[in-house]
Image 1: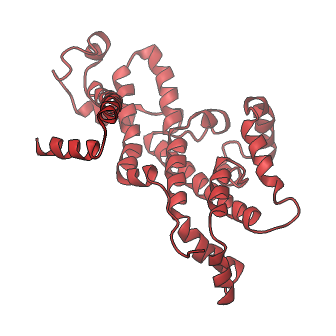
Image 2: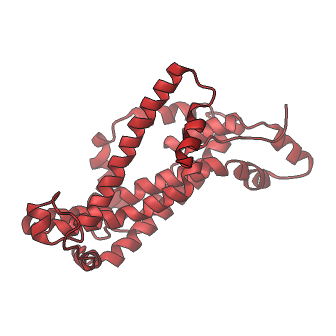
Image 3: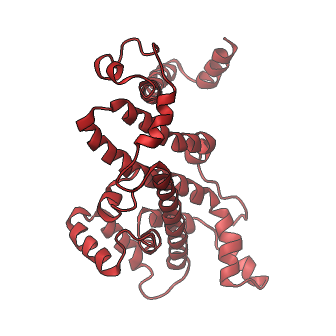
Length: 295
């Protein structure tokens, strides 16, 4: 009761009656949405511990009867594709999701800083080019992209995580561009007076101030890379990640009907993003403040 009273005071503090009604409705809606997400994850965990017959014939009846926790462990043996097992797909997921995101963020942050803070022919044109690339459909270029990857030897090649993440022309460029535009030049000028060079200013002054943005972009991009499977099915069929392996396993299960292992695998794969979000949810939901020198 004390927690509910504190929550009530926090939500309705200094609110008019009409605002209280709106806040109550919004709170109820988001509570239901959050509950639905938690319920789906919980249901996958429970279903992964049930027998084949119970999951197939009685998916929502007597959910806690006859649970076999060992079946969750069996998922690690069942979730395989061709020559790649669970451990191999886990390594691929970690390598590609982390490497590609780190390289992309570093290249984007550097490229956006140069085109925003330095004047040179074409520096103002980059923003327009990025905006055009953002609205162009990607499906019409998939054939040319695949041909390019074949010619460069990047099909089933771990180097693809590095080579294909160096453009710096994605959505992240727009975020960094907006951040750098709002960053006072006083920082740069004060460092130059003290004898700091361009690299010192960027790595020791600008990057530390952009860590909030960098962390938020890393978390969201990593989750997208961890859950992505389309690119692995096309460009990395020999090096599948967990998401691609789960997709292929699901196709196989459609013939064997071992859906309990699919649900258990869904629960296991969802654990890392869930833990990451729980640890860094404030970073993802809070605004980025700049602080420092007054103009």
